[in-house]
Length: 203
View 1 (cartoon, rainbow, N blue to C red):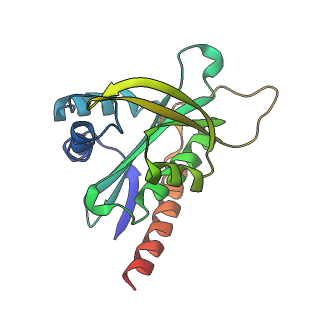
View 2 (cartoon, rainbow, N blue to C red):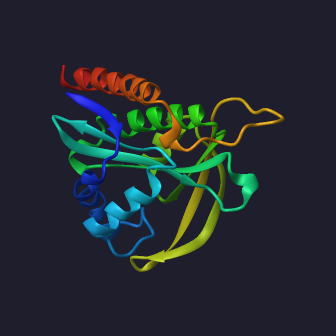
């Protein structure tokens, strides 16, 4: 059984375990040292009250996670968020990243955000395909912006519009202020689509 829910501090170890090989073995993340369980817990506790941070579970095991964070510090950027999703290597191609993003975008729209941005280290055909399928459009490429695993790396940036723009937008709410019922509904709808996909793959 699949489910999607907001993160808990107790998820830190499972999330750190998913993220560690991505840091150690790939250029997908520009971090060079995997965060410890303690560091990951601190990140969760710092980010999750203000921004959605979700986990996908299958049979009570964390299979992936997605989160939003501040796009830039200056005030006029506050309607935009950066987003990321990571899935355990055993669970890829099951649709978990798409479902997590679907729930995340619904929550961001409910909070009042209007843009989601994602950075993709190139080459990464799987991530490019995921973001295109989720409605992202390419913005541009930072050429040779990072050096990792013995090579200079390009990063492509992608934008997905969320909701409708208005001339007098309200400042986005913090995630902790969103009613629990709205969070549960959006997570359940995304998890239902994941369960359907999983059933189709098994058939």
